[in-house]
Image (cartoon, rainbow, N blue to C red; front, side):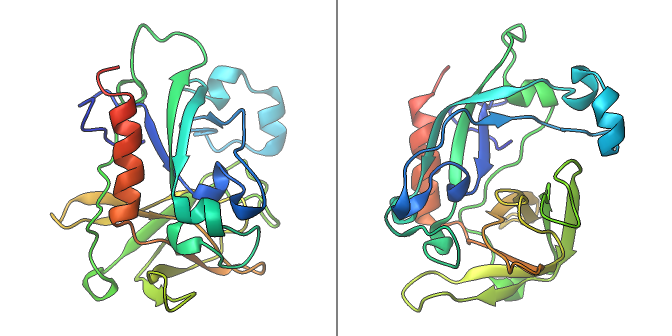
Length: 228
């Protein structure tokens, strides 16, 4: 959940990866996207989840995406595998509750939201960066939240594209779109990237450094729902 300047304290915006909302150059937009904040926050096993109530699994309910936007570069260059378009692999989803929540926004419902830093520090200035996600490829099953923390390095896919952040991490496929948090330009925690790519065998993850293109996507969604 990210802060929305057009709706202070009442954000309904979620940050994710471009490939979580659009197939890239080989396809189109995905439909029926749902966001479940704090999914399985009790860290239940797959067996326990079979017997759990919906409230236990989804303590803040289910929120459906009613609008999604990603970069033009991802739509034009994005690939199913490899690094095509990865430097621009980010997206914003605007959500609405599955069931009315007394007019409460997502931010009000969960009680927090992170600012997005579109002028995030360069790699040498970052001591530590945390990535979160729900890895689903073996040995994980997509049911539990994990995180990795590391001092980032750089990953360059193409000389013409922006350099990406890279961290050591054992999370596998399924963790895509998870937020990366670091001290922003003001020294406070901020969203600075999201999980985009990693090797099939795991070991590291890479995410785009958010800049002008990301801010353009964010501002467009924010503006579309301003005051709502």
